[in-house]
Length: 129
Image (cartoon, rainbow, N blue to C red):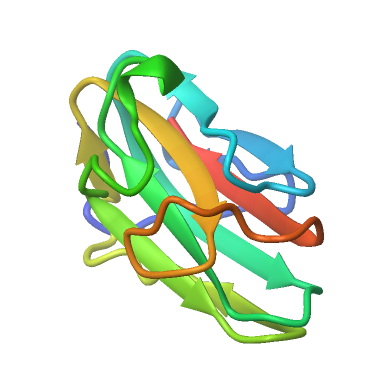
């Protein structure tokens, strides 16, 4: 079980949790669905930096593999928009993260639930366990 309140140190580890967190950087995320984690996991934070000339939409899916996602058809479980040349942070609804029962897959598109990939220049940082 995870503590009800958590503090994350500079290395991305949750203090008070022996297993800690993993962190991953995804530079130039676009329409290619990318795996954050295969198998069940918990997403604690998702930070997006958009250096492109258009708003991007980072879609997050609770599916075991990237191949299970069809952008524009598969409905994302979470989604974050990020304005042009800006940064955005996905607000996690509780201090214990969001559970993904199958896996965590992400992609960046040009529209809400869209199928067209954003241009290169969308950087995503994920903190998960």
